[in-house]
Structures are given as C-alpha cells and as structure tokens.
Amino acid sequence: MESVWSDGDAVGYLDQRALPQAIKRERATSVDEIVDAIRTLAVRGAPAIGVFGAYGIALAARLHADDAFAAAAQRIRAARPTAVNLAWAVDRVLACADGDYAAEAARIHAEQRDIDRRIGSAALELFPSRGSILTHCNTGPIATAGAGTALGCIIAAHRAGKRLHVFADETRPLLQGARLTMFELREAGVPATLLVDGAAAIAMERKNIDAVIVGADRIASNGDTANKIGTYGVAIAAAHHGIPFYVAAPRSTFDFSLATGAGIPIEERAPGEVRIAADDDVYNPAFDVTPGRLVTAFITEYGVLRPPYLESVPGLADRPRLLVPEPARA
Ligand code: MRU
Image (cartoon, rainbow, N blue to C red; front, side, top):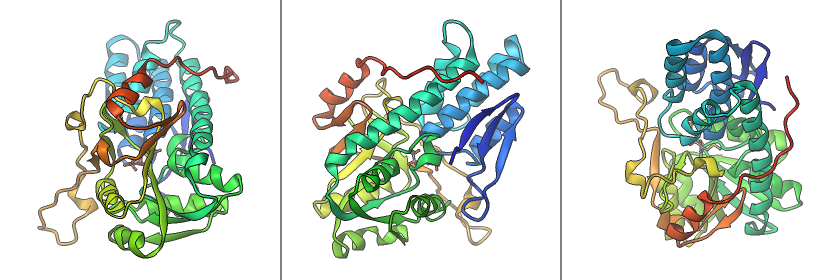
C-alpha cells in the first residue's frame, strides 16, 4: 500500500491517523498542508517523512519563489526534529545540480524502495527458520514509502519461508504498533500477537522471543540510536535476557556529524496525547536514545554492521551510492 506519492500538482498520502479503521487517501496542495501532515503524524516513519518532504519541496518550488520558497523549505525541513531522514532528503533535493526538484524527489523515493529490499535481504541470515520476533512501533511499508525496514525484514523473511511469529508492542501513546504494525502484519499474512508496552519484558521471559528488531530515526557514529519512545527499555530488557537486539535502517538515518546520541534532538509532543486528568503535568518525549552498546547489529542496505560501531558506522559514510534505475517521469 503506497503511503506517499506524487499526485500531479499535489503530494498524495495515506492518512496514517485513520488506520486501521479507514483507508483515507489525501492530497497536500500547499506547504501548510505538507507541514501539518508531518506534524500530526498523518505521514510518519523516518524514511516516509523524508520522501514526503522531498516531494513537498518540489511542490513548494511550484508555489513559491525566492525568499518565500527558502522559508517554505525551511519549514518543511523543521516539521519534525528527530528523524534525520527529513532534513537529509530536503537538503538533497535543494542541492540537486539541475534544480529539477520533482525528479530528485522521485529518485529518493525509488532509492528508498530499493534500499528497503536490500535491508530485507540482508536481515534473512539473522532470523531463525522458525521463531518469535518482538518489535516496537511501526516500521513497515507505510512508514518508509517502500517495503519497510524492521517490519520489512520480518515480512521478507516470512515470504522467504521462515515461520516467524511477531510480538508487536502497542507503542503508547499513539499506538503505532496496535494500529499500524498489526494492520500491516495482517495484510502480509504474518501471525502476530499484540501486547502492551509494559509486557515486553515478561514476553521475553515467557514467550521464547528469539530476537528484537526495531527501526530508527537517527543513529550517531557510535551506534547510539534514537527511535520511538520505549525502545530503550525494550533494548535493556533484551540485553537482560540475552536476546539479540537489531536495528534496521537505511544510511540516510545515520547522522555521521554526531559522535554520540547526546546531540540528537528529542521531540516532545503535546501533553494531551498522554494526559487523562486535565491538570496533570506531563513529560511526553516521542523518542528515546538506545546506547549503541545494546545494539547487536545494524541492518542497512550495505549489509549487516557489527560492533565496534566507531569503526563500522563511519565506514558507511564513504560507501558509494547504490545504483537504482531512474524512476519513470510523472
Ligand atoms: O513518531 P513516529 O511514529 O514517526 O516514530 C516512528 C519511529 O520511531 C520508527 O520506528 C522510525 O521512524 C523508523 S520507521 C521505518
């Protein structure tokens, strides 16, 4: 199911807020609508907001010129702060040599599809032929505008004949796991069990979890990984139980300018997402940072990266861009 697409003079998207109850396809026709779709998580997931932001720049360039365009591009780039894919994609479109923003956005999208397929293939060797995998948040096709990262790995392994059962954390407070991951697993025919976030540790103790796999929003040079709030606790529990903890992400999620995760900006969202009683004080970080030492391996389009990350991660920065056929022109 396509989550983002170029739609003539607009940018099309699947409204992820409505899932799984309704499949609503919408069109963003202004910079305000692009920014709003990203901020409200109508379009979410690090690679998907990168692709959407890239198409958004092409739209902004059709609607605005000069200073107004520069301001619009900046607003799109800053719509969400943690996932570096958004800033990366916007910067790449703005830097394209021929100024054909629409073509560069389509190229980023085509590359993401190819990257996801490569990540899925690279992960195959890490899964048992039969077993249980726990995941947190949503990292399937709708989160990447491709085949998905962590969930894409699970779906690829299922299609390759591995008999995997998924334990999906519900992912408070916006329920990406309960609403989106369970939906995508149902669509893909992968057997799955939903659990509240707080049940992840007992599931590891009592449900024979063979591996944990999650996505990422930004990864520092030492492997420190920002991902959906709750991931850090899942990683600690996995380490306690001796269960491998994998992170699947494209190179565009790595921020080679950061030595550690301490510099990753963490988005704090509205108290209303969490609050029950009107007067409650609320701390609502949307992401946390899992220390690189808790990550067993990263799965990227270039293969599996193992520790020491201060050597393997910076090496990724120098790898040449993968060759992907040019996308058809709209
Ligand atoms: O706030 P969200 O739903 O955009 O957070 C998404 C995540 O944390 C995902 O795990 C991450 O972006 C990877 S998506 C392939």
